[in-house]
View 1 (tube, rainbow, N blue to C red):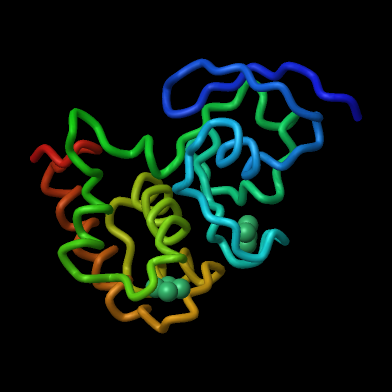
View 2 (cartoon, protein in one colour):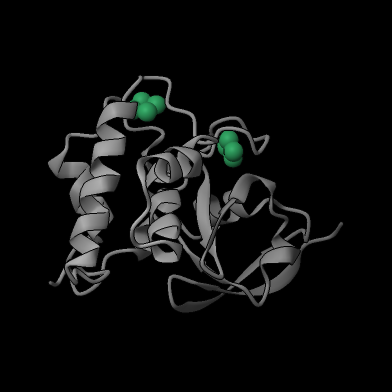
Length: 165
Ligand code: FES
Ligand code: FES
């Protein structure tokens, strides 16, 4: 289809992009809006590297056509920090050294944020289930699970999206 203008809300900002309605949201975020937090992994909705929040749900932006994103509240990795402070989930991933190559981390972090927003006190089984569809080829799973548990504890203590306790 021919390119058309689409009004989006991304990281709290209203933006307009011109692209074909079927263009995948991932390409719009990275190529039109220079938001490179979401990564291209498989392009097939299977690895989770491209995850963003859409109305608070962790969804795969490589599988979302642009037309389906209109009117939704989209948050990317770049939109998690507030007031110059990282989100507690981001801080926990740093503190726990939960990265090797780091390619999966966008998806892990965005999925963890959605998980902890819905369930502030998940058990080990819930965390594993919540992240099981996010692939990490480096085998950093132990550190990632530790980071999510630490972030959950920090958030229950009152740390906000900007990390304030
Ligand atoms: S790049 Fe979207 S799920 Fe793999
Ligand atoms: S840290 Fe490399 S893919 Fe997860």
